[in-house]
Image 1 (spheres, helix red, strand yellow):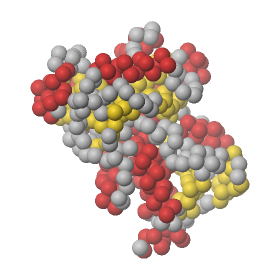
Image 2 (cartoon, rainbow, N blue to C red):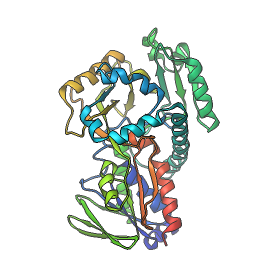
Image 3 (cartoon, rainbow, N blue to C red):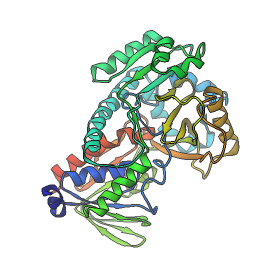
Image 4 (cartoon, rainbow, N blue to C red):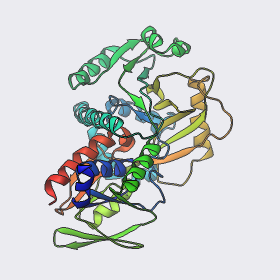
Length: 414
């Protein structure tokens, strides 16, 4: 109760963006004594990138996208022979400088540095999430599932084990298994005999619906009077006083606060530009389907490493998500891309889901930095902050990045 009372007298913090990153930032700020005000152009939380993501809280699987392995796949991607990734010439034209930086981050040394930095943030995210599970009774189809990353027949087991050992030094709970070991963990994987060399097992991973969590957390803030939500409001401009942000101008008026946090995904680029900061974000498209359960549904969450896709039992549905397309932003999924995506699911996992009813196809553009690390910290303005650029790891990194930025704000904003 004392914390709730303090929240009414603590600093007001305006958060631009009601995706999973924005809402978790608000939740952590509330817990530390601030009064969060969330602003979004949409009518509810998590309507964009967080809407139908992979739903996996894969704390040990946050490797950087830019990697030597991806560079090795580039010839197939460029020639259209890789179903799991596309690269549009129009996208390259718009993001040429970003692409050059991305390629530089694909060197082995940079890949390892970036991946381990993400892992450290992810493990702190897990600790915060455990606090929330004990504190709140949110309904978001949470399940401590464990996870296996399936390795293709050409996987290098020695390199995989060495990389796993590096992660274990940071506290990662992972185990490299051969095919028989994978089947012992998940009997339904007997179907992959000859097509799967083994897998990486993560006992501490979980699944949960990011959109449901965001909406439950938002409801909690509003109903307890410890925060506000301003829906259907587009931020048009920021009014400054020397090096301090004074208030936001939206299409419905002004929003005043003691501090401001930009958590608006790709839309953060334009907002930061007004504040004199160039944000290194590029759109990376991903897809998902939500289907009825099939005849052989694994308990474990799955990552199909060879095809850059995941399979998750989420409540009474199967969520199939993945791919990494570097294409211009557009509305909706092309029928051809959707058919390719669905066909790969039933080719790889024919008994996991039923091809009937509404498949709930979804496409989202993840805000990706060249090094795959989110941008978290203070802007040039003394009361301006940013927490964005999580790529496809927004859900799993959200609690850790929320804790990091919230603690910084509470330390610096008086």
